[in-house]
Image: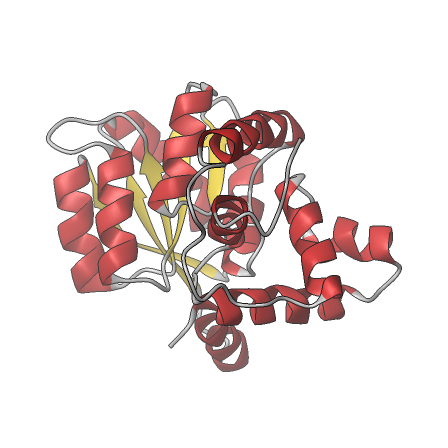
Length: 234
């Protein structure tokens, strides 16, 4: 079952969004839990204090969304993210960090993270972040998107001599337009406005892109497209 199938199923059933909180600081875990506790459509199903525990809990609980600290003992959040995405592909992961360093950002996206949230965010913004990634949005602010684009461009130049892996799935012209805007950090509403189409149409294009590329998140699709030279970012 793909991520989009999971989201559709959950929306139809009216089930709450199941969230796993992962951070090595108990105070931060408690703050995040309190921020989500009042939301009737969100349920905190577990907490973990390090990456190893996060992997074990995610495998057992199969949460819809994980709020994942980047830097933790035993196993980092990025390592845990990579393992969780391999074992529970439908889970969306939001990285939590005090840093917006380019290396952390790029490694998190490559590991399969769907969003990247700085810890100085207002707590009342956390529920909307959870809902956003659960609905298929990529949670990356414009400043981070700019850094990500820089990394994509660097990667594209470094791999310019590498032959593309075959076969490379073919996307339609409209799907490529949508993918280019995703790479700029735009959400579905912004893409719809830019292309003068309905937001649901954008969602359908994104779902088709992920199905064709056999990937799980929007940013994974951008990374793949740059690597295979389907998409040039300058």
